[in-house]
Length: 448
Image (cartoon, rainbow, N blue to C red):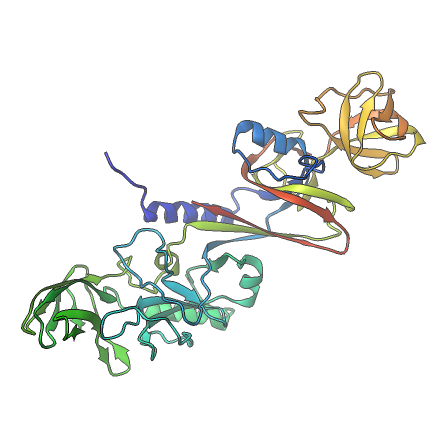
């Protein structure tokens, strides 16, 4: 039996996830790890999404930082001169191949309600960048009809805009502290007419038309008007547009059902359908619905000198973890936390080196060195090294180097138990080396 998950469900899951973060019922952390190479060629593998993959990620975790902020996001579509766009269409599931919304150079977001077409009905490239923040839809001279939605503020762009995604939100309330951008979005939302006819899609041009037929929109709303054009040579209806009414477009209002009737003009067989908003509130009332928002972005900035993060060391994995715990079972709530075990040495015969493989000469336990701080060695073990515990008092040596010393305390556990928390996301990368002079701007996107 054919079935599908609806856009509405995906959007609801994303909004629920976002709202739980906003309510701070859970703690989310971005963590980095894996200092050892992928292989001799540093070939980055694709995460398999298996329990073993998650376990191996936990083995190499170095540090984590609390997620600073999150936002609902949608695929980013920059307006481009000469590109043909789709129009907002309630008969299309998901995202069409040609985008139906754009971001202009001023970070203003617009939905395309009607594609510019010539008299023969052929879609034309968009050559006039939509600008301005009118509450009503407007037609540009290239025939496209646009509806302004909202503006992305500079601070939100910095946090939540990437090369492929951009933030979206609904402005629920405003007050004396609201910015101009927030006030404008609230005004746009508040001015929306419910039940507008946004566009008329021509399904069949019919035949035998010698003059322009009448287009009637029949339904339970009022004041929507559309006009047709014909291709006289072919005798077909070639395009239908919503009628311009002074400075406005005659979208009408209060439609929940609508049929299009094409009569006169000497021909027969032309059919079309009316496009209604995705929600009863109308297009522009909730950008999250109009842009089919089903993704959430988590953002945090790892500064060069953040505590618990290693310097002069690299990492190859980034992950998102929900509700990691301390070794005593309590929730981690600090801004940063280390995930690396460490040992202290009672004496050092020869200095140790980061990334070397070390071995206990009594237990034959092995591990990778992640960091060295005076008499402390931070380390991690993997499936390759085995998980044999080191022993207090045993001699410690580098497997392929001169490092040598004697262990004082073999296992000192960090603040966070890296075996706890739900791993929600894994990103395998080429090695990234951390220094005090740099910062990692990490943006994690969960798509539902």
